[in-house]
Image (tube, rainbow, N blue to C red; front, side):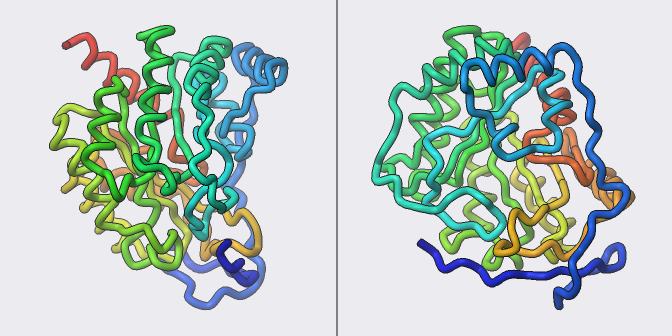
Length: 319
């Protein structure tokens, strides 16, 4: 197990700058508010989740966008257990060694959950599984196939680890599964990777993931995400965005990082909505097909998925 980080305290800093010396406790600004709205679709999904004891990342991670996504028939599932083989400083998932454990029935269970919930857009993510020879690629692919076998009209997005040891083979496995959107997050700017992500993570490895995906299937829809408020500068964010475009990434999400506990990486600042809007415009000018950018935006975000759904269905129809 990694040594826990020492408790942090953070301070608010001016728009467009970064803090290098955390100080007093940082309070959420007025603009950081969750819109709560439950329609009949949300209530139906919530009832089914409780009735069948289903586990979704939406509830487990207390995602602020659960209302928007469930209202629209979207949910995110986490595969391959609760123990991650890595220890990123921003993540609240438990670190450990699963020792090759895998629930081989999980792909069918997830597919049945998708059917039970009546979803039309599904996001599959997972813990890192460096203990597995293929780092979990086949398990992802099997889950996609099980969902598609039940209903080929359901769109599936996979947010996967970096597959650092088996990248080309693993990504080809994902493509062959029939997945509609292939996502992998760079999480932060290059300079902050050593202090934010696990020691095995590399900025270039994450960028190469996307390059390989497009080399193997040029029309695959690809997606990545950057967290804001970790100590990055705007110039560094713009540089990271340029790097993603050079890797031909189609969709980008940018959102505010929130510190899970005092032992995790600090929030250095809350980024103003106007700044997020500026980055969104810059991203569109760079050539991203869609950019979702705002304090409440997460990697799996309905605003992006709405655009992706239209884009994916157009490509399916064309083929």
